[in-house]
View (cartoon, rainbow, N blue to C red):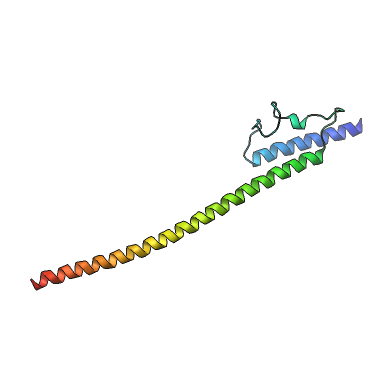
Length: 119
């Protein structure tokens, strides 16, 4: 009896950990289709003898989900970094072109002013 109660306590703690990790990862308590069952808790039900599933297996599942999220975030960061570099190069080129056009404009204004004073 004590062994079953200890396993139930572990299972409840694991369930709380799962709910907390969902909140941290931006999910609610509801099923988002990644839990496997229609009731959202099919992978947390009791095993064949009425005992909770292996706690280590549940923890490993949470770790794998977190790793997948981190990989996705890292990929997005890399893509955004590349886009930022492209934008920086584009702005540098634009600034250079703007300076060139400004110089040409000032030269044209100077030429026109000299033409007016000599006439």
